[in-house]
Length: 386
Image (cartoon, one colour):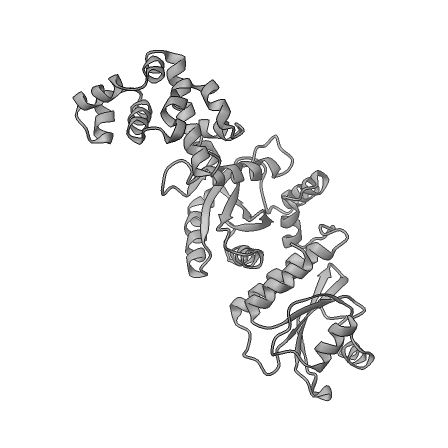
C-alpha cells in the first residue's frame, strides 16, 4: 500500500475527502474530492501547496507543534473546519492529515479508529526509519516482527527487560488471517482495538500480508481464544483462520514463532471443513506437506496410487473410501462406522480399486505414501493449488 491508496481507502471509510501534506503544507496524497471540498482545498490541490494566508493561519494555530489531532476553525476564511492529525515518528513531524469536518456529520467511533489506523500506516510509509528506537510499548511491540533481524532482536531484548514477554514456551504468538475483503485500514484498526483491551493475552504486533500478529502468555490462551472471535463478530471483521505457536528459548526474537503461527493459520481450515483454529504443535505431518511445492506433475512420482485416485478428478467415492480406511489405520470396523456402510460393501469397494491402489494397500511404505499424498492433494485443493 502507498500513500495514495491509503487516502483513497480512508476517504471511502469516512465518506469525505482526505489530504496528507508535508511540513511545508505541500500535498503528498489526496483522495478524490467530494461535496465537502471548499475553495481553500481546491486551490491547494491545484497548486499542490497551501496558499500563504491559510498556511500562516495554520502555523499560528500551532498545528506544526501538535502531538494529537486538533480541530482548526477556518471561520476567518468563511470555509469549513478541519481535523488536522499529526503523523509523527517520535518527536519528528513527518506529515499532517487534513480532513474537513465542518458542516458534516460528526465522525463515529469506528471512523476515528480508521483515522488512527491510517496514521499508523502512514507513519510506516513516511518514516526514514519506521522502526526508530523508542521506549513506547506499541513501537517496541511492532518491531518484534520487523523484517530486519537486528531490529527484531533489539526489540525482543527490550521487551524482555520490561517484562512484556518471557523467553520460552510461556510466550505465544498468534496469527489471525483476516478475510481478503477487509482492507488494511480496517485490519489495523481491529488489531489496535484488540491490543487496547485490558488483557495481557493480546499484545498487537502488526499486520503482515493480510494477517494480524499478536503475542500473549500461554496461561491466557482461553482468554485470547474467546476474546478475538467475539470482538471480530462485534466489529464485523471476518476472520479466516487463527494459528498459534510458542516461542523457543533458543531463539532471540519472535520471527520463527510468527512464521509458525502464520503457517498454522494457513493450514487451519484446509485440513477439515469448519476447523479455523490450530496450534503448530497439533499439525504434525501437515507442516511437512505444506513445505512441498504444489506441482501436480510430481504426484505420480510420490504415489502412483494417489495419482490414480485423483487424476482427472478421479472417483470421489473411491477416494473417500481409501482415505477414510487409511485414516483409521486400516481398521475395517471403524472405517465402516465413518462411511456408514456394511463391512461387505467396504471390502467390495477396496477389491475394485484401480490396480495401483490395491498394490499400495498391500505394501507398508506405499500405503503410507498413498495416505500422505491424499492429504497433500487435500491441502492443495483447499488452498487453490491443485
